[in-house]
Length: 222
Image (cartoon, rainbow, N blue to C red; front, top):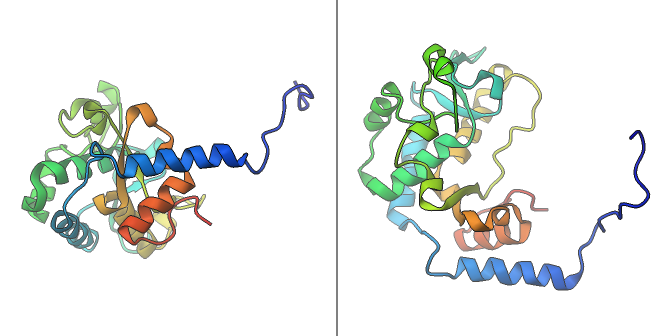
């Protein structure tokens, strides 16, 4: 088929008010629900500081961008900082570890976890790919740190996309650090029931979360 099908209706640019109202009700209901997992302020502050220190250390920066390079360690062109391409798996580790260990995690703990390949960089990888990779952590094999095992989906509140087609090694290091912090800070994450996957992508829901946490510029927000 080389042209649009005339019998497929186009989705309206603005959804009907009753649908938008229903979405808002769902979003508010979940935000106020007792089932929604929440970290305490002291744990959120600890992890904000921890990830900031991580970003300024010599440890690899996890960068969610290039799927072909997942498992590799790339050297940043100007700074030589180590970059570890990944999917959303490291965020699972961060938020679940924050719930499990709270303020007890140190930068040395993170260094040890990286060396032991306990921080996953991808959801899945073949055994052959694992053997040839520098970063061997696989979410499916790292039991206990996959939010999906508990019935949750990890969504980010503020947009973490780099929105660049250049290779990550060529991007400004400060941009990569900012991206890394948004990816790894539990304060920028919300756990959504797997049954409601997609809720965390709705602008209305993200605005409500951002208001609760006093954040700016939730993803998809205008």
